[in-house]
Image (cartoon, rainbow, N blue to C red; front, side, top):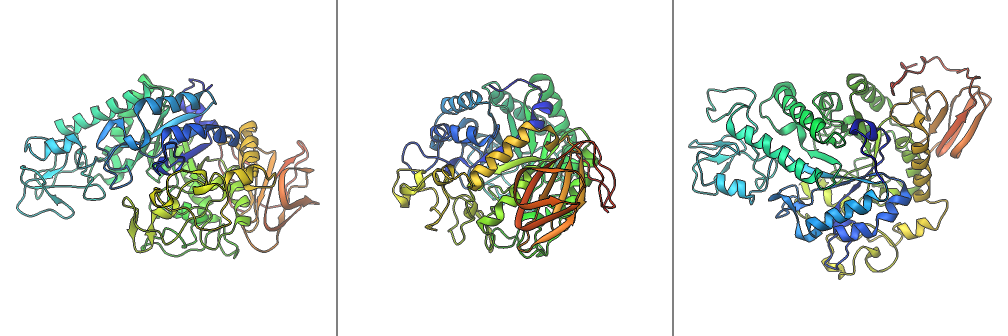
Length: 551
């Protein structure tokens, strides 16, 4: 059973698991995943050890952007079942100690939402951003109703932006409304009503889509931060157990703005998501044209640098203090999986050893625990393609459960599946890896169990980086030495002269003050207390997850 601890407390123990619902498990044979299918797979999540599930949007939608175009916030999409089916899943998850978060699309709706249809016929309505001009302002779209003028979309044209006001006036754009106008106030009330509805049914919180996008022309996100702090105050009073996570990509800004946690993402902050991309992105899957190619640290070439991530994490952690958390995903529905392009299965264990021992909240994207790969060459589906080399469909393929038809995902004919399966005949499955004690799945289980049983490996334990090249070596809580070598070559580094007893290790040994790491090796070692004498020139361990100064 889950407890009712305040979110700031239970999130410290969280290991998140992201479910893309249409691709996880199909119970009725229509080729699309649903709540009943996900409920039938809860034992997999319980065995894995995750304790918090995040569903991608599951509200009613025309699915022009895979559900991020909401037509009714209070009703789930029929493809997934009913509201009662969702509540049944939540109750079943709770009985296994698993909380459930929903994806809240706060900044826009579908153009098929009743609010927008009414607004498009009512010149006095302020729920959306309208410009009553002869020519459209840049990016605006012509009204589809009797109302004259143009509306502002937030992403695709079918996603009109909800009006939370503008932070600044502009005489050339007299249609701008202040943040305290009636339309913006009504939208803030609506967000509270939506959250209250689902939290009252047993949900544990929300991941908020495009959380930085609400107030327009908002330098430094000052007004947007005020909005979220207002909502956080209401949440703390009305639902103190509920968590608010953001898709902002800049924890140093979003956590002080009122969120319990934010993700390092493939976008966000001043460097457009470089902190996350510098770890995983090898330019073989989802690729945005403006990104400058950079070899990731987790690359067999050994030409990457961990310092980009370490510096970014350290700065964000210092800005946040004890106010919240940074979440580190393996992947997500918009970004390439770990197993992408040239990155092979033997390279994945070191990545998980890092992700599950670093002082961030780990978020595992469904299927990454078995090494599902990004599937290239898929057609655009429900708005998946964002650019010539950016097709999100490759990260959204059906979960691979076993070696039965459709990999156990669905009984539908193959041509009716939400997306095609990975055609690789050697594709990994849960069933095969469950039976193999040396599989990635069983390693991830062991790492999660170790993290949950060992507070020093969580976000509060101190962190001292001993070596930031290859291998990466750091000490958590003054007691656990972690070593990862994503390189395809052997690597050595200095080590504490303590007795280092392996807890989980493969290809790494520690002896005589030296670390010896084989290619793709990883290891977690318990150091004998009281004898520690580090042989490097770095600084002392710092509390609350802060990294030591660079040597």
